[in-house]
Structures are given as C-alpha cells and as structure tokens.
Amino acid sequence: GAAILSPRLSPAAALLPLCLAVAVRACGGTVLAAPAADGLLPAGVMVALCACEGKAAGGCLADRFGARRTAVLSRLCCAPLLCLSLGPVAFYAGVFLFNIPMAITLCALAAALPRAPGLAFGLSTLALLCGVLPSFFVRVTAAPGLLLLLLLSAALCVMLTISDHNMEGKKDAQQ
Image (cartoon, rainbow, N blue to C red):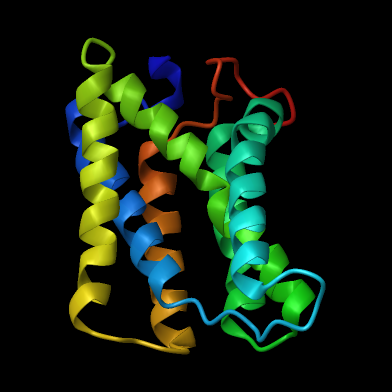
C-alpha cells in the first residue's frame, strides 16, 4: 500500500513526479531505434515481447529487492544498452529493463490514491498520452542523448517518490 511511497512526500506531492516518470518513459519509448529484423521474429514483435516481460517482471523484482532499488537500477542499467549501438541482444535486454519500472509506478500511483483507483489508472493513462503526444508532431529517430536524458529524469522521479520498501510494504531485508 502506501509504504511504497517515500515518507518524505505526501501522497499528493508524489503524484506529479510519478506521472512525470510515466510520461518520460512513454516519450523515451518513442525515440527507441529498434535494430533491423535479423532473427526468427520481426523486430516489432521482439520489442513487444521484451516490453511485456519487463513489465511483468517489475512487480516480482520489486517485491524481492525493493521498489526503489529495482526501478532506479533498471533505469540506469538499460541506459547503455539502449543508448549505445551494442547489437540486437543488448537492445532487447535494454527494452526489458526499460519496462520494469512501469509496474512499480502504477502501484505507487494507486498507493497515492487509495480511495480512487480509477483516477490513479486514469492519471497513468493520461501521463502515457502526454509522453507519446510529441511523437505525433515531431519524428525523432536514433536520439541516444535525448533518450539518456529521459532515462535519467525518470530514474530521478522514481528515486524521489518511491520508498526502499517492497511493494507489499515490507522493509527490504538486504539494506
């Protein structure tokens, strides 16, 4: 519940940086440059599978290692994999890591609005729209510097709003 939120912020104060983290992640997703398809599956299918698996793994990893640690480390670890041209395997691993914090930010939004889960979901949806909206008007391709800035911004937003508890509210035993 609410233990996922940093005790330094009120739940209301956490809403803006959490929505910003979701919007930044969505915007970052629009500037990813997928490698050319050279495997059994098309690149778009591989990206979708890695994104799905990353989102699914996010909650499990946060429960095991702590929400803030999982979200921040996955953001920092995906940066070189997505911003440097290290090949398709590194790129797909980066996409997996890039998507891990989504479950954590959604859980934190729900914790910030425990009596309004529909509003929490609506805010996350609005944040996703705000993040992809620029891509409707401006085409940005292969922008590693922009992507790095977005990833670091999202990591900072999560670091400031998420506690070092796991998503069930238990203090991480490894700290």
